Image (tube, rainbow, N blue to C red; front, side, top):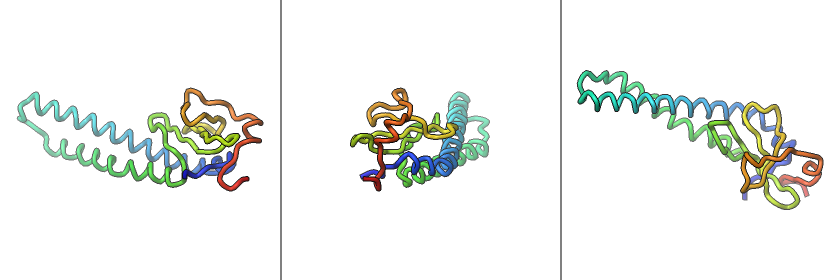
Amino acid sequence: MPKRFTLPEAQGLIPEVSRLLREAVALKAEFDKAEEAFRASTERIMAMGGMNVDRDSVREVKVRRESAAARLPKAIERVQQMGCVVKDLDIGLVDFPTLFRGVEVYLCWRLGEPAIQFWHGVDEGFAKRKAIDQDFRDHHRGDLEQ
């Protein structure tokens, strides 16, 4: 059973989630850059028949890629261990499960937003975000509220 958050609980986690998510986004960017460099090196090697290969450069790119690939899941896992759902690292999107009128929904936050201001159904996603209004505030709950 997933953890469910009240809006204040989720909002209180934003500074730490933001820090961890920035780390994960940076690692993903590092991996993507190293992957592209590795792919370009491989294509160059194949085009040249393996001649004049800068093995140290290729090895350095491969090490960078593997390092980022090893650290990225750990960064994501730390966010998920808090009870959050990492949805999209490209835009830094995280959801916080909650209940609204007895139905599980997500409080939706994107890296760079000053606060959690939106929610959406579990099957809806970012494009269907709705503004948190007084009705939502009055009728949502986390694990500890009754």
